[in-house]
Length: 271
Length: 271
Image (cartoon, rainbow over the protein chains, first blue to last red):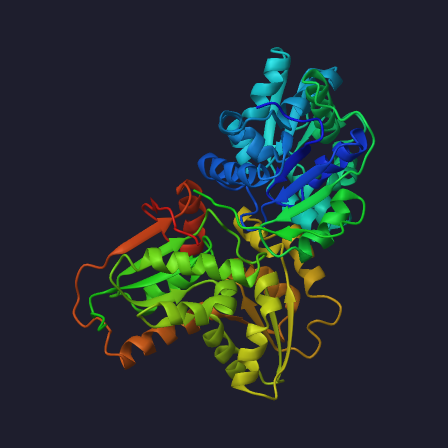
């Protein structure tokens, strides 16, 4: 099936976190229409197994394919870590995850060759970042740690002050950052905690957020496949959620950095 | 349909939290067999809407009804708050939630007549505790507050030290406890944080955990319906989960206070 330049870019995440990726996409490719789906009825993915997350990711993708899409962005590190092969096999459009672009960005940044990754339990346990970083540069020394409290802290809006600082100190302690000069924020919620993380990690450590790198990768995929939209025109922004949209809209505006007019509730067919 | 005295008591929760209720049941009614279901594939319920939680609760109940049950315990405050009428309408066995027993216990404890309730967003927004406490005693002054970080703190095992103390101070601040002498732990995860909560709330405040009150209510329902098991015999303990059991077993032992031998993974039919 040949996709159209006029088709939209589909983006999904378990909830609001992927809006940091959507934000980067809207800035990098402002002429492209987007359809975002947040799977609020099953959030979070980060504590669930690869099999369960893959089933949910496929259901999200199929719901988005009811729109005319030319690419699908998996704006969730956990789903990118475990479900990318299944999504690529199931869908007729290119599928772009956040992990390979984030790993590439980190490999370009590091000078010491020691890279640390923080993410959900699912992402860290999958080993996907570790593998992607070693694929970029086999000599890299990679360490990864799950930080389960960062998602609820970001969602609660507790992104500054003592509680997130102490949590960050605890997760980044015990030599985890020894010799590390690059810290990958391997979860789309974590950019909201970037000021605290930068403070705790110290000036010698550069934080890498995969949102911008992912938006660059999407632009490149569209260009290579001659799918970039060429003429100006009305840009459509659709938001779908699988539970009541009120809190998504409230919390989501912090993640998207702009007002989020409305979101439509849909049911997924999860097999 | 007439239930048998030999049938088991079904218990469900979104995850491990309900094991605090199961523990009380096992101590109060040691001769009764139990089947516990933790809906790990959709945990947590506390951030989701009443409609979605009701769909999940019905699916949990139907999965449990594949065992021969004589009563169903909704060991989750959020599901008890929003799904009890739907469960009672759908099931042929008595359904016991945790909110009415917890409210009754709190109404018996308070002297000042000012009761505070803490729970998930879903439980607090439902107003179920507020209504249940006023049904016990219309003159009670009830205030309620959602504390979304307490569930991830309990699951992460961060139940002592600075992070939970500061979180508790923040949630219980701004006059929330002024004149209050009774604090209802309106979420089955919160008993793990009881020492920190007691310290922050101070000696004048009694904590009420609905697990014991719920076990008493179950004993009373069985007695009234002549369903109490009379003779000693082999007691069966079944654990079902909707995602991989490993972490449930590890974390669950902290909640149950004893080893949890094994758990079987099942799929729910969620409509």
